[in-house]
Image (tube, rainbow, N blue to C red):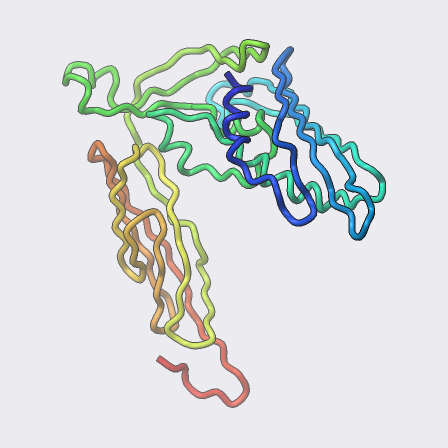
Amino acid sequence: AIRSAVEDVWDKTDKRSGRVTLDDEISVSVADGIIRTRVGGKYRMPGPVPNISFTYTITEALSLEPPNSDPPIAVDVSTDLDVGALVPIAVIVAMLIPALGGLVFFGGRYLTSRVADKRTEDLEGVGETLAAFWPTHLLHPTDELPPEALVLFPGKLAFRWRELTVDTGGVRTWGTHQGVEREPAVSIVGPTEVTGDVLPTTAAYTIETQDLRPGLQVIWSGAASGTGREGIGTFRTSGRHTVHVTVTDADGFSASGSLEVDVSVRRGPGDGEERL
């Protein structure tokens, strides 16, 4: 399943960047606690020199972290680039990492809230991607359960993984689960200090959520405006401003967050008061 999922994503991955062209096929093997990914390609040399072939191999050994760890799986990564000595290795690796980081294929109906807050640009291999997205909990719709069931399953199942298997059958974990109350929270990510050449000036912000299912209604306020996960702060005066957001999910759970932003304006020689 892992192999076919990776191949499906790889088919849609951009394989050309500058002088580097990656092969159309990618090889993934899973056995004995290790995921090994191989991808080949060619580097186009300047002038009439023939293209240089290369092979990049990522070897990832997976192990289970102590219970309640996040992420729950640890990955020991080693890489090997087999290429001619004349090829600038840094150029090839710079192309490979974002391409392989796009191999996000693990998810599901109840895990997308966790996936939405994950960033993949630093994930290089299949094992790292799996480990980063491996669930520590499951959020389920409260309106699909009768009132008596909400006593045992109040909206969230917390997993306690006790065993990990990585073999030809794939990657699997075993453990226990417990129904717990959700703890909805939202935080705002963005600059807390903004300096503009002239006022008003702007800055971009985004949100990270906890225990909120997809179908989010996001309301930005204070110095910020927007209609989704990303908001724009508009600062018309120097001094301290507040960026505020309120998020409500598909089940009616809600959370709010604020960020204090200090705003200043650059002044050149001879400048007077800031311009509004």
